[in-house]
Length: 407
Ligand code: UDP
Image (tube, rainbow, N blue to C red; front, top):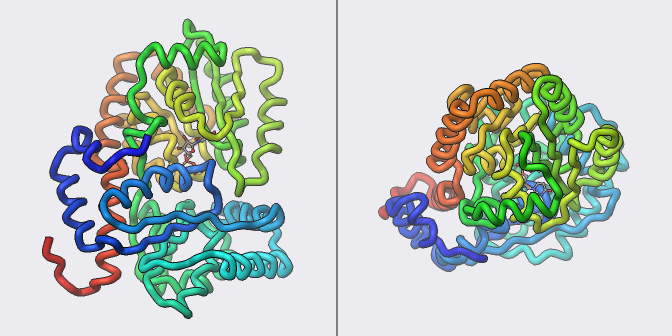
């Protein structure tokens, strides 16, 4: 269901809704265009799906387009993604040439026509070439944890980045010395989406029955694309350590993304590792499994996010919003969401993660307190309404630099 901005008032209060309307008045009818690399799968698509209708409701002429590219292009950009995360990859001159050719092809074929462009992540970064022809305001929105980015790749990307008007990172630690403006805007979740809205206990039961999951024993869950950076094999190790003391089950649920060619390979590794244990459920979910994910998160006793690197980790916000105790790696944007011991638990190792999972399973009142605090932290900081406000403010500040805006 598509929501209107007014629907959020009971969740975030009237003041923020009023502020959004006042800010949006200054941008009425103005075209804004978002471009990314996939329409389904992963956090960026998740956010844009929900945000575009709300910008339209606020009176902006918002649209979202997806670049085209073949398998070779997305294999190269997945290497970029991994290198931004600090992983070693081989990139050849031919790879870079191909990246540029596909960028040129998209520049020719796409209708790039707006006053404000939000270009998400490295895949479409080359579209900024168009700025030389049409001007307007261009924002590169980097969702990836780039703290330990491979210097060769950063040097290459900087050739594009410096042509933008501003860069948006998800967390302070990702910022870099740059000649252009940079700002921090954390991602967000939508409390009214199928992924996050309240579900009746009957609905949760139905989904769990569909997957034939035993409700009588504790459930540990990680929801993520099957990606090396999400460390699904590490999650299995954590589960095995916990299992020595507590008869629990593990759900590893996720799907793929069209811009992530490594997914199937990782899924096969996980299935192989899990094949002899009926208490590990590996669920490969099709796109639009939002209700299923919502129910799995709600039915869990502990939610894990054992990422090796993480831009933000929407799955953490989703679980916290549902009042679940979360144990997650202290990486990237996860550390913004979890204050250790207050809104969840942060871990650094497989052993540490297993220890915290046991602590939560042994102590239901502690688990409940973490979940309650976590939900409030997300309400205050990481809901879609705050995110929209930050984008509106960014657009206004780019256009009216140095001017006072009277609301
Ligand atoms: N997600 C999904 N289906 C899946 C796996 C993940 O809908 O099979 C969603 C998940 O609920 C979250 C987003 O995709 O909303 C993942 O965002 P996150 O920031 O956690 O990680 P990313 O995939 O962007 O690295």
